[in-house]
Length: 336
Image (cartoon, rainbow, N blue to C red; front, side, top):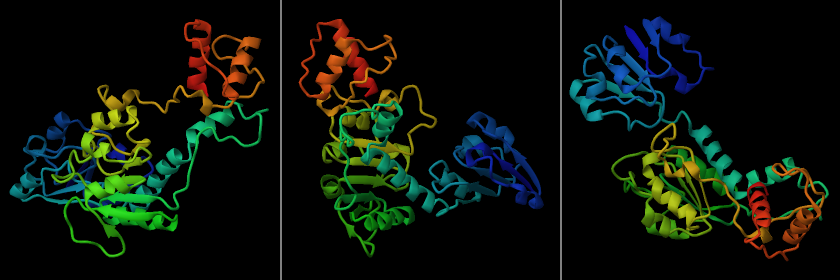
């Protein structure tokens, strides 16, 4: 029997695959394009893959093929109708990543909810040194407790996330895109209700005819402006251009994405240039008067210190016709 791994690098280099050797000849490829697959699987009995597309074009000449194994939960890269027609079985590893994805959900949420990026930069850039007071609340953060968490897709992973969120004190509601009957323990609602009521929304659904393009412009418009949105399902569930516009227009507070429509990210992805930017509301910033090293212009001058002081004291009106002030404030905008 010949077993072919088509994209072994995608499952990590710390996995011991020697156990497969006892079943026959094992061939491993780090990555495979759709054009390369045809030749590589031509005499394979079993192919093992993660993201490679499996359809008539890629495996049509694999006459010995009996089994397709997916090293992931999602199987939207398989043409199941074609496999059934050919009599080729397929299997995935449903449930293998439940704890990992649940943990990653909270890692992304807490990063956004507690403004970790801002406060990490604030300390590492030494702006806490000699600041005015020991507390610093320039970026506001809140607790999960008391918030409504809407889950799209209450499968194994979704339920695990719900259980942990409940332990944090969140109220859980969920929406089933497939229309499955209500599950015990949590309140099932329609999509509009979930979008309108949720402070946090996370997706843990597969990609199918019910979920593709589900999160579009209309969906984001129904969400709270303070809502944090997380996608840990599949990229095409979200219309990325619409998400970008929702973030740009402050229709939602933040987004965390574990998946994209195209991975790695393409040059044309509208989210490519999205940064965790500060706004021009300088009243949110705080700065000591130490006159630390300017990354662009050398040392801060007395004028620079005065501008910083005014910014901190919320009393500065910037004259944007003054290029020095404009340049200085733009630097402050992107470094504070």
